[in-house]
Length: 527
Image 1 (cartoon, one colour):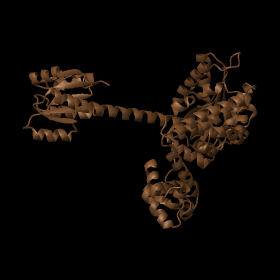
Image 2 (image 1 turned 90 degrees about the horizontal axis):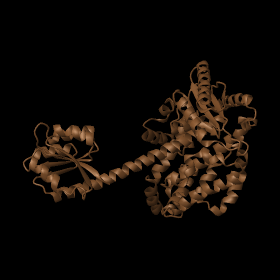
Image 3 (image 1 turned 90 degrees about the vertical axis):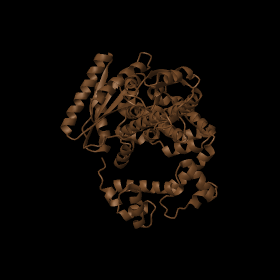
């Protein structure tokens, strides 16, 4: 990769000597400009945006230190190489405080400059890689959070989550949905062609149109319900104001879709509900409203209660299969764990969408834990709706799940460190199942994975980035926080339920890890 370098030197002979005698290309750079002092250089630097600045330290008008200070404030990523004479030690000290990259004493030849530039180029390459890695991680986290929010909204819509679970999940994924009242809008877009297939391109246009309208309304959350169906969950403090806002938004969505997209649409507005767990009742009312205008909708025959009962995917079983299962066991795993929900999904696009989002999200989290890029392993996560369009039979569902698990398990098996990772999974599973035992020791966990305590301690710390004690404490404190938020248990009972047989010691550990004693933590607002 080629980087840009800018030269600031008041002595014309020195400036031309550096400019003309350094092999910039061989050092991995492009010479992009020069100036006789900092004042003239500054607007040129802002224009050409160099990666590296080479500047003399003593110059008229604006010297190298003044220029470096401005550059550090306005363009902190730029590398600065200072050129200085032997009698300028105080300047050198000031330059070091400013965080210059290199400090070179005059006279200096082109070979020395080239060597320094090559070292700087290596540092720039590394920083570029780190930024790209960070960007990928941020994108990955954003995608995972998006899937988690989508799944939680669907769970709320079908009544598939308790109030305490919903509140905790909202906190973890940053879904600011908690309010005094809730309302659901269901949007059914009629896009089926004569062939019976959905116009996917038009569906995505409609989806984007609705998303844009929803984003203009605070307190509105948008998600895909199924092929051709979209959901908006709204919250608010005043029930009548929420009802009016919901009706206004529903009318706006219907008008814009029919006018802008030229397709038929049915929009149902649900009833205002006071409890988070009653959102499904608002959805039922919205579903009824849509069904009255288009009775042929297939999902109408399924009540939210029935939908919730059908959504019984054992996520723990899926996680365990990903950790230690074999593809030769897929048929039996499908029959035992996946077939019931798969068959239910044939009757409801909502269940099908929810089911696949749940499985894909579990696989995405597993791949991420192994240090992989989920998109590379599961391309379907970028276009779940398009992926689901052609899945209409139990055989197609089974094949799609087979492909998904095969790709994930292949990735797992190709990881050089998987055996150690598998060992850590097993150890964590054991800890998660026994952390309430106050006598749980490292020796006992090590024995479950057939390692000596000392070896296990080293492997666990290296693979997880935290010691066994720190991990166990974190799990126990997270459990205690959950109990303090969602129950009225006494703090002593919370301690026992979290793996501590001494309430005073529990209080000490809790405060050390959270900054607050348990009782004060309980009194914190949960919104």
